[in-house]
Amino acid sequence: MSDTLLMGRRILLVIGGGIAAYKSLELIRRLKERGASVRAILTSAGEHFVTPLSVSSLTGDKVYTDLFSLTDEAEMGHIELSRDADLLVVAPATADLMAKMAHGLANDLASTALLATDKKVLVAPAMNVRMWLHPATQRNFETLLADGVDVVGPNEGDMACGEYGPGRMAEPAEILAAIESHFAELAFPGGGPLKGKRILITSGPTHEPIDPVRYLANRSSGKQGYAIAQAVARLGAETVLVSGPTNLPNPPGVTVKRVETAREMLAACEAALPADIAICAAAVADWRVASDAEQKLKKQPGEQAPALMLVENPDILATLSQLKMNRPALVIGFAAETEKVIDHAVAKRQRKGCDWIVANDVSPATGVMGGDLNTVHLISREGQEDWPLLPKQAVAERLARRIADHFSTSKAAE
Ligand code: CTP
Image 1: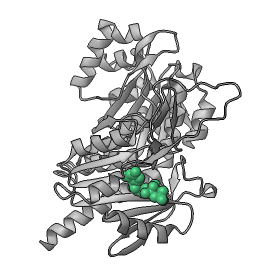
Image 2: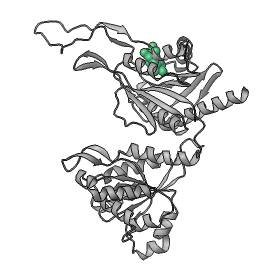
Image 3: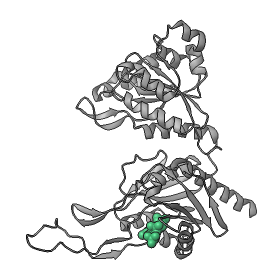
Image 4: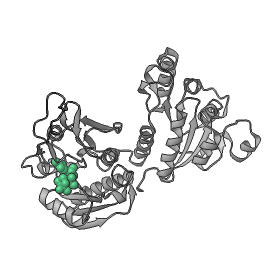
């Protein structure tokens, strides 16, 4: 398995005519970052929302727009376009495109390529809420599901047209996750190497209240923990993600428990036991305010600023590592350090009692905190592995694979 599931995969992206088309540009970027090659068909309605030039700049290829272009037919006809792809993705999938697909119409390049394909098709519907809820669209949707088309979204929320409800296109990250899940299922048809394992993961920051409107927090985005949850779930693990407040969508196939404070996070972890593996990637606040105020603290003219009295929070990693009953067989912590990364991480592993520590340098110059890249060192009782600078997604996939290898080696040694 390569570090990313998408390396070398060929995606044919059909961009329909919807306001959400701009999100497809971001999707192309993310697919390319992960090593996929992307060809795009832009419908004539789609051209009203994004330009062929912006699409082709991102795909690094020409944009396919016209069914009847003789040159295209000679070089790369519609049959060839769909045959050449590993997966077809329709985003945004408008009501019109979905209707064409459901009825087998083929009156432009997009619908013809979609009809001519024998590959999996993933659609990301995007339309006005009334159009989505209309019985005709719902009928077409049912038909597409029955035809074996995969669907991601639509999400509920404020719409560009000013209405509220289901119809917003899934975010690029969600579409990407659905694409990766498709390739993961191809790679592991009977379930992945972590099938039968239950994995508990903590992620994100915690928010520790000062009063009803203020809190102590940190800069953690939760990206690394979410990526790990997704990666282990893809390898077949039953995955529970206990997350502090983040802006990230729930990874597919993962049970997500959202919490705010360190104490809530610990309680949610304990409730999720027993687990075979625990991965503590959360940036848990070390301290909380000793007694948070029930009412908003007010400024009093002439009075000094209030002093916050802090008390220590429970250490979730140490608690899980030192459990007498139900201790997960493999407990993994993270050590985000700004200096002497290895020394601190080695000491942290011993102090907390976990099996592995994933250490990384988060000094401001690295840009790691909240960013997309990470350089990590995996420290265990046996020694240290230095991993190269990798996207957080690739770190997650490598860690997931490393865990799977660990269990297959220990099973072999039994
Ligand atoms: N951790 C935890 N609960 C806490 C503090 C930390 O579970 N209350 C976990 C983190 O999820 C991470 C590991 O412990 O896996 C190390 O976190 P880090 O913040 O680097 O360590 P600290 O214990 O806070 O030590 P220090 O801040 O002194 O470096």
